[in-house]
Length: 354
Image 1 (cartoon, one colour):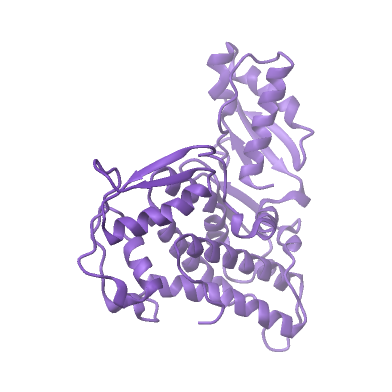
Image 2 (cartoon, rainbow, N blue to C red):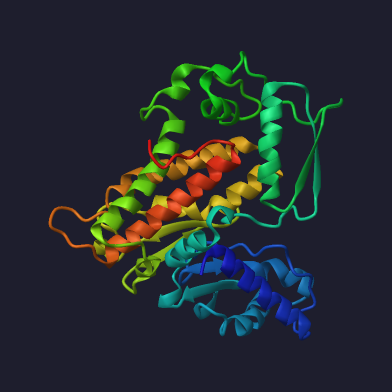
């Protein structure tokens, strides 16, 4: 069960409690899911009972107990414990761990992973000047906002509501991909650099790191096939592996804490898992704040977290492919999917070979 799924499960419990008359409240838009704080317990915690108590006219502990009764039989939930003034704490079943669920979700949804309905039915009018950077930003925002169910209409009239700092010179000599990155990676209030640094294929170039990390994930799939094995996310959540959620500004950041070092090797995969789990939040924020630079910077975060991990995926020497290798490959492929999808939204090619 992913953080998103658990949040939806909690909201479903609120709806059921309201429908049977146990609570008289409005169902909130989201239930924040975090790592349990001091005195907490289990894998996840939520403060939704404290959030609803005043509107319900009942003590938070009572609201928590009502919701607990509706959550105990939820799919993927092992147990629910109420702690402190009314926090609901969850433990997941060992066959429903968040890392495997996250990887499966990415594999199932592909490029649509992270898409949501936060802007469903909304028409966003972007009034932009006739400027190359403004045009590129508006085009990319059209795709990003569409991931959240919205639609963009671009208008070239005053008063403008989208005026990024113009590029100091024509970015076209950089080529299509590097030009896009040069215009989109900086925040809209920052002046973009139109330099050959965007073309250099080394670590100092963030665009290179993103595309190289993606190409490496594709190469690992080919190499694994040559060795006779494919990805299997099921083994990421062996009972020996404990994974905890870490709260990001709202939700969806995951930090993996390992009890079985042999399962994922010597490289800690927690940063990569956290970055992948955060992708839906980043997409929603980029759409809501009209900020494609948030997506570009997030792809750099994913790439930087993925690159050290990718070296642990394949067997070494005479080592035979194992469940651990299949699990690592599944996580690597999930990273590649997120990188390719994000680059596509930015209008940048994600080559399989680099």
